[in-house]
Amino acid sequence: MPPLAESPKIGHAASINYFAEGFRMDEIAELVQMEAQNYEVSREHLGDAGDLVQDLVELYRTIGDMIAESAVKPRDEIVAGGMFLYSCRYQLVLAALNVMRGHLNDSHFFTRKAIELARSQTE
Image: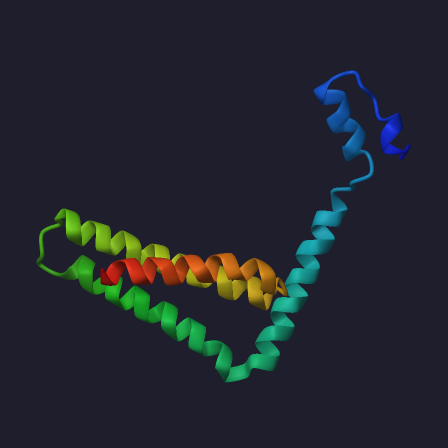
């Protein structure tokens, strides 16, 4: 790939093609494969401790099922609470998945969102 100073100045599409030339799609496949390997190694090393995250996710699911199966009519506060509950669960799952794939720094965003959503439910 020529130096940046020699990049084409023909337009947006040409510059995208210029920068995409050095990127192979199989790099994405390699990354996915490495993440899967990291995940499996994490599961192996965590053992039963890794099940704690799944237990917490199941707790969220149980609470959500209890809300759905209750005789309480869907009011704004019930629907909003359920949305926060499932959003918190989703953020928690993404945080755990990022950590287990080897992306510790990326997981902080999702952990923070889960904490903020849980906090907002108590107000």
